[in-house]
Length: 265
Ligand SMILES: [Zn+2]
Image (cartoon, rainbow, N blue to C red; front, side, top):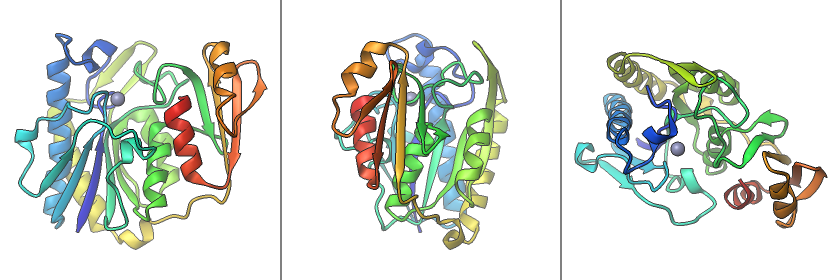
């Protein structure tokens, strides 16, 4: 059984300030350690359920957050970025049985994680087919495009609630909650235990039933904090301005959405 894991840091157990997510800042090493522990817990759960091969994409910032020395021998680690539109889901292909998302955060425009955003700080809010567009929505659908079901999501409470209806087999762990600038975090010991159990449970289900089909048509809308970005990115092929701060793209090809996401978000 092959498992793909994409890992981020803003939805790990205690990150609250941007500084904690930026390498070279004093508070970063502790957050990177927590990210490694949560990914390792997901790996251990997957191994307990019979996974034989695991590919981890270190998908935050420079992509060099996870400690490679803590990865068991049947794990491969993607570090850095190729520039592909698959972005945070790069590495997944039809040979995988399941996808995990560890440490993910709420989308731009939500108030329950101080680090909520969608790809960059530019968008005020993003919608895909009318749904609040989190990075999880974008890249779990990228996995669906490759025929791989998303079965584990760990992150802030709001993201897990928004995401549960998106995939029938999704097992979630809410590791923290928040309001405005504060977070209320579960103990990292509890978090590791829950993630290990959830990962095992996620793989022990009937994975065929966890599969979904992508919609036939996509409406992708970005509202920017600064109107000048709406004007600029309206020149990206396919986008139209629909108001002073908002652009919209309509397509039947999901790769077109993913390509627009890496260039315009
Ligand atoms: Zn991140």
